[in-house]
Image (cartoon, rainbow, N blue to C red; front, side, top):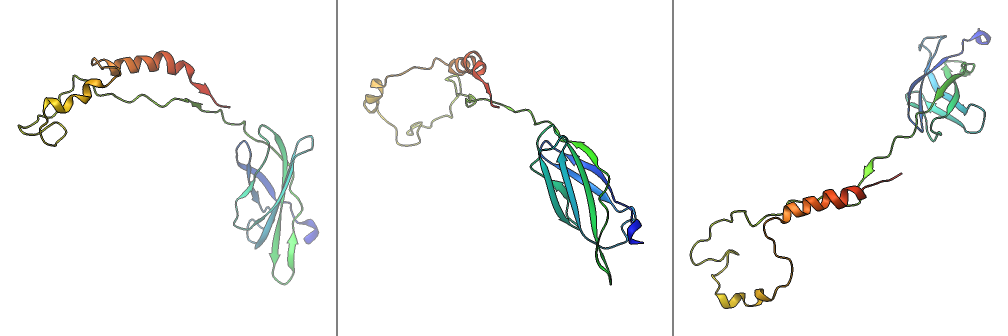
Amino acid sequence: QWNSWKAPSVSEKENTSTSITLNIADLETEGECLVSHYNISCQAVGGGDTKQKMFHANEELKIDDLLPETKYNCTGRIVHTIPGSGAFETPWSDFVVIETAPLPLPEEVSIFAPVTEVESEDSTPAPVTEGESESGGEETTETDHEGAKMNIGLKSDGNLGTILALWQCLIIVPLTITLN
């Protein structure tokens, strides 16, 4: 009876560019016999890259670290636990050829941060009550602002947000790069 045991059937469940997940079906007992573990072997068609792995009974049958866009010959067998007889290995299944997926395309990445909205001078500030400055402190006198007259820099004419948006469209967007 043990010499005529049917080999299991192996089929593809899922694949990515670097992994293959398999299903293995027991054609002899249709799942009635206790499983100790599974043995899976996948070899690149034409030789080279070979992966072999043992999986426990309830573990996902996933072979990792494969090459993208590569065809693999995969086979498997079931090791049963037979009460009173110990472990029994089924014959290896027929090979199934499975091709890993291509590598995913890289996402476009910009090396510049997005331009944020800039408050223009046209915005209406909250009203200031008498005896209080805009900063929330005591009212200041004109002499307190003498140092501010020395500030050097660009003065916004209310169009700064528009200028920054145009700058981003004309300068930054064409400089976007694609990382490989």
